[in-house]
Image: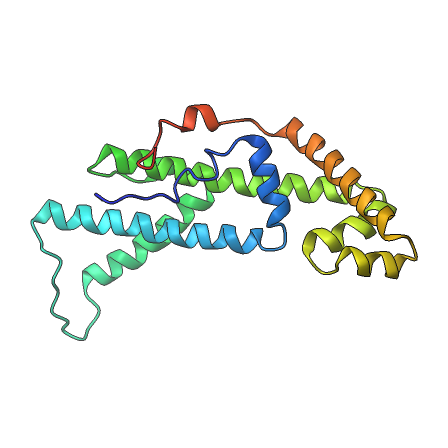
Amino acid sequence: MRTEQCFIGSYYRKKAADRIEMLFENYGQFPAYMNGYKSGLKTFISSILASDRREAIGDPGVRVSSGSMSDITAQIAIENITIAEAIDKVDAGAFTFRDKQDEEDVFIAIHELELMKNEYSTLVCQLKSLPESDRKIFLPYLVGERTPEEIAEENCIGLESVYKRIYRVKKQMKSRMKMFMLDYSEGMKRVGRCS
């Protein structure tokens, strides 16, 4: 596919500390972000495969509909299922592309999505391991359910105490998360179309 795919590698290219910050800043929306990434990745792979099919047979891509399901329609439906399964199984080798750059981009994107899932899951587990007293202050703030002022009022503590606890817990969580995260940013700068 001869286009720039700048969403590929954008998470991978971040330093571990920046990925942690991204997880914190987008905690409540991160599952939706991952679903959107997966949907975009399916479309990306499907587009590459369709382009490769057309190139292989010299087809300009124009179709006249006959109103009935054709073999190509069934083939595309099966292909969509295969794409979804390959993404879920983290199997970038399930596809053969005409362009080696497409293979590399799909490999990176599938593994990048898996990295997002794993790091988000790690954060969720780390948050669950917090003492209840910290969790009831930090989680409503992290998810964006309550402001520090509302948290202070709800828990009958001073606003300054809420800010200090949020800062302390966030610092502690970042430290814990760093233990489980590798920094891919140096190697990824030269990989992909958007380097």
